[in-house]
Length: 254
Image (cartoon, rainbow, N blue to C red; front, side, top):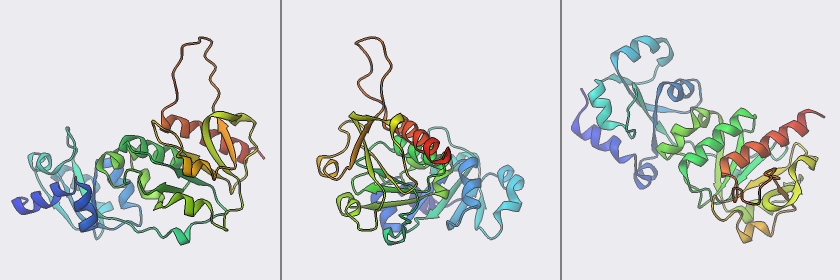
């Protein structure tokens, strides 16, 4: 049984201001929670059906958990179709001073759609890119839709939020700062290095003027459409996948 006060407290976490105030966020679904249990993130509470708890008992260790009914899960879920488990997690704190400039860094400028951010995080995880630097106006990683779209990858990533012009003028950057644009060098011709910076822009407007001024080389993903009428641009998460594939292909083929 879960109290009305607890239900209200959990439901508040669907809103950004309460996540920031309480320092907590919601993770739902077996895949995401299992990945969470294997991470260094701190779980404050876990709510699940009896069946789920019995099946995953060995993974719970010292995690505080409560068995609740599926109807109770429906009342605390952020999803239209609730799943069998929901965890309340402490928001991690990533200090930008600890970023490793010798390893690849993916930079996101103004990504606003939570699904796009989640898919980008999942894609970066697939390609082994563990460091993502977001502009202050990006949607927050702890948005429930973002977390769901990562399919557990959020638990393996360091996601920083900062002022991008300040970050991109850091004296610690020794690689090239690349940005994706509609015009530029075809991405398949770029000889990437491990410590390069890859910048992806806003879904509608691309890379901001302030950040564009700091891009050292513009790259674009060529279209092979034979018709004059074609898609205006690529979705930000799809563009990220292509960029990371080309980057990793060049790096690991050396």
